[in-house]
Figure 1 (cartoon, rainbow, N blue to C red):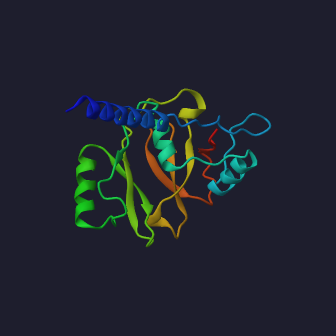
Figure 2 (cartoon, one colour; figure 1 turned 120 degrees about the vertical axis):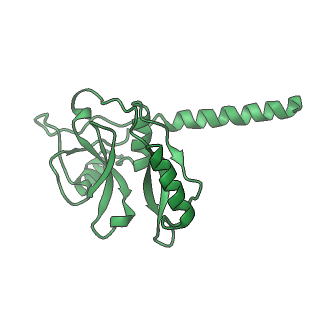
Figure 3 (cartoon, helix red, strand yellow; figure 1 turned 90 degrees about the vertical axis):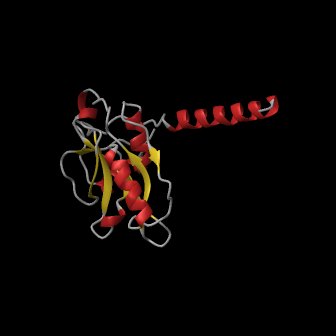
Length: 181
């Protein structure tokens, strides 16, 4: 490899590292609280409204995953089949391989309203934050497309770093709100 190409490669590699580092620095605000200081519990619909009132928004599932990575969770792994429906043979094989490595798919809809893998995430290594940040589930703004009719969205368990989903219109009493800063 010539000096010119080594320099170009080093620059591209450095830019990629900077992009990954910037992505991992998702900044969430503090847990929203009521006027008496109690943790504010709300449905996802109300959580979105609270964030809008603060001129911000709820984090996406990817942003919550990146935040979890900053707390020790494993890296996010991208799919080799973006946009390909999850029931295809190649995607099913990829999902099986990722699950054996303890990575789980986070889904999104493609333009044909079919469920596809957006990325893979593992909570392995996640370190539970102290205080209320480690007690509650946190809403994302990301729809879980397999349950579109029920209105399910992704939520992050602050205790374990595990992703699940809940119905956006229900206040479960254990979901707290953290908006992006």
